Image (cartoon, rainbow, N blue to C red; front, top):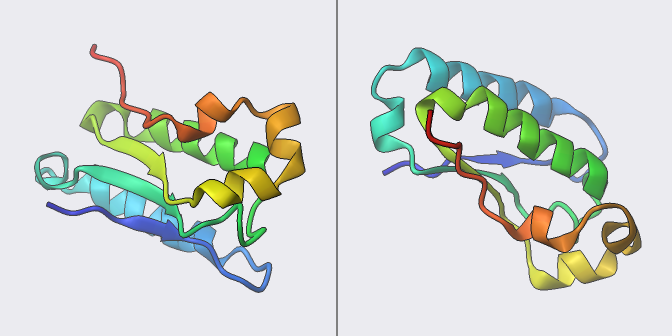
Length: 108
């Protein structure tokens, strides 16, 4: 099984978007991807590292869920509990249940 991770940088650049796009392109174009890919993770500890805002992370997860829906690949976050606690905007703008839930595409 493959559990790829979209790794955020630590210097504020957006090179991670190129890696994300390449990963999604490979998953969508490879007919075996849905059989060997269990989950796509966004991380590693992006909230704790202040690599991305909570609202933007939620948007990225929802976008990934939409793009991977036909493959039925789950989307989740690689984050420490402390990462949720240190980001003040998290509890005001994004419900904790949204960020901690593993997003599995709905059955068609």
